[in-house]
Length: 263
Image (tube, rainbow, N blue to C red; front, top):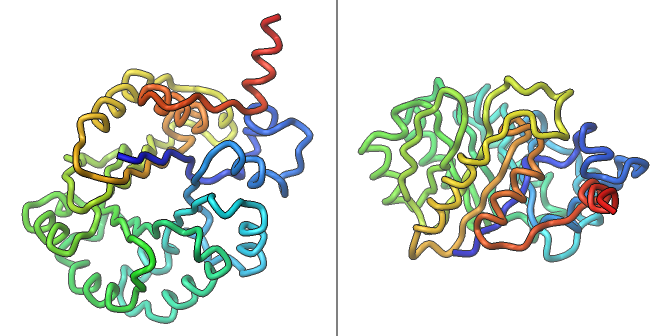
């Protein structure tokens, strides 16, 4: 399985001096990030549809080989709960046109209150609108998404049910499509001001995820996205998972400084 591992976003003040060079302007953070990682999940699209000028800059700052995933705006998933969202869908897709060739997946993160039964007819309408260029992993957080009916529906339609590690969700992690999308989120007990260092060591849990991924056969692609709330510093967690999977260690500014400090 080809496994791509990245972080849910790149614009975090706490990464300055730990991941990014201390004096690097934040306008250059994505360019630096994309030289270390091959993929990221755009978290900001959940809060609002991005202006095309910003998306054009994302395209300019990344190579043709870099890949993005993005979360559907919350107005679609949470406020309108997938109901009558045609205009918002078209606006969202249009906003991403500058990075169209670099987008691998668009993630439907659904609210915990949205059951499979309520969402199903709306999803049928939604997928009639969505182009075939991308895949659309569905992150259902209501317990009904893990029922036999829901899993059978997802399998029949080849929709990926997101595997996640997030507070309050008991996800049995079924395989429902020919790819995996995994989100290691954690909880909100780590504050934004603590980002940039490991606050909660979850090395054993990361090792368990590596073992789980290594056992999976006949799935060609796995995408793993890691949030700062998981351990406090998602680049560290991503690197830890990579090395447990036998992938090469990534080196960034903070790690270089530590290495130099050992002499």
